[in-house]
Image (tube, rainbow, N blue to C red; front, side, top):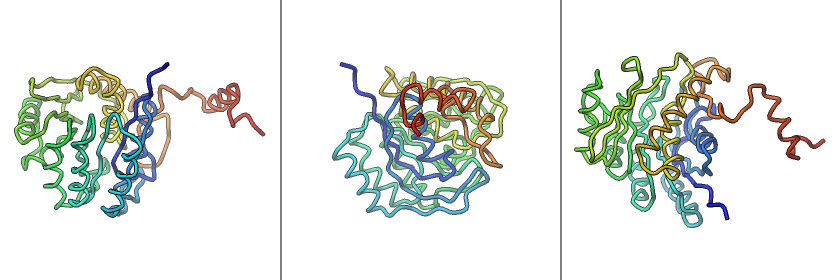
Length: 285
């Protein structure tokens, strides 16, 4: 009998353009062989051009979503993304001790530069960092969590990752973003720090990169022997999604990464052809 497919939960905001948030998380989880589930914390009006508005889901309904889901299904991993208010952050934090393999992406600012987290919520997210198994801040988010200026070198990244551990985080993946030519990230835990160089991809289509990476780590953690192995493979996946992003041609701003680059054929009609061969609904008239 085959082992069950891993199940991963995303607790995050919705992106109607499909490139970030819950939509990107579910695409990522599916692409990486994981059954994805979602609890929506906020609705956004956004596209590849930016964010026009944010509406937080009432806390009691977020709790109802979580209670109903968790009474039936136990996730093998959980990714937490956008938490628009302090009340939402506090409420979600109550559930983290009972969940396995939790990844917190402390979303504060969208790729477009639009702020997604109110000022009061930053302190609540700081407290939440100590409850997650891994946090994945970028340079600006790490700076906000620490009350410092963004790191400007790899050595400064190491130090800030260590400071986040000192502040209570269990594991940290500090994302280098555009710092340096090789897109180096820093992974830190109780055993020390590890530099994780990457390949910079020349594309403007970067919408949802942070959501995609954290969701990939959550999807892969139940399938890998360690956190660092899941992080390394998630970086490989994201690099591929960025490298193929220009092929999508979605939107007129910062387009999304290509979550399905390894699954879709080069010609779109190939999908319908394969479904017809398999007797799927695409072959019915």
